[in-house]
Image (cartoon, rainbow, N blue to C red; front, side, top):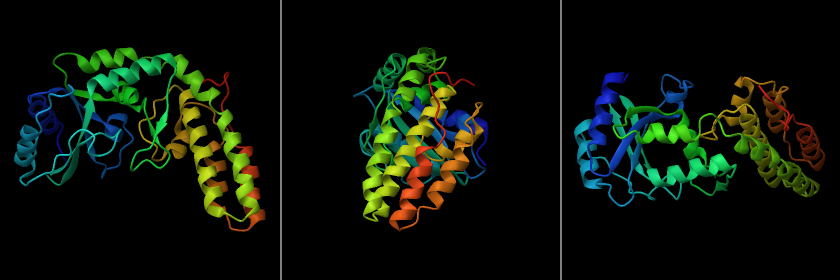
Length: 273
């Protein structure tokens, strides 16, 4: 298991690379929802156009004892950006690049109640752009000499009321999706119904997190985590889990699932922790 002192030492090394302005522990480790085998995610915040990739490659080699490929910004897609996967003392440590100007932009959008979901490999629902703001709000700074992470956190703490309202207002799309699924059910198109249903469920899960003023930084286990929120979600997780587990293939089975999902518990403007 990686020691906290080792992570701190690594963060200081990374922060010394030209272009890097701060390093933070993110992901489940920062939120306290990790498993014993969870990766360590280090957010590497950098100034656009200045990141010394060769220095980072050399540093990754020294820490892991082997060659490590560095994915340049954009190398992992438009939103996950880039970084590297290291194994140190038997633990997986991920360096994840974050363009600090882009993160600030998303923090300001979150303040205004603006958000969107974008196509990104590894994110079947879509990457939530203001997840950058959520990372800034929940990450544990390991090296922040210039106070960059502290300033970003101040922009989105507490959770923006405008974003909370926008996420809940956006739930009109849920019935739009489920009404479309009805047409697929009549044809016995289980794949299309599953796609519409899963998207509808995750949209509501996002809204439940917003209602509880809880940041979402990853869609994995998102519906499951609703049950752990400090809010009465009226058995949302149980309802949607049972519904999707019983999708079936026949038009009548598919229609029954859609009927159940139309009744899934949803937050509204008055829902509070």
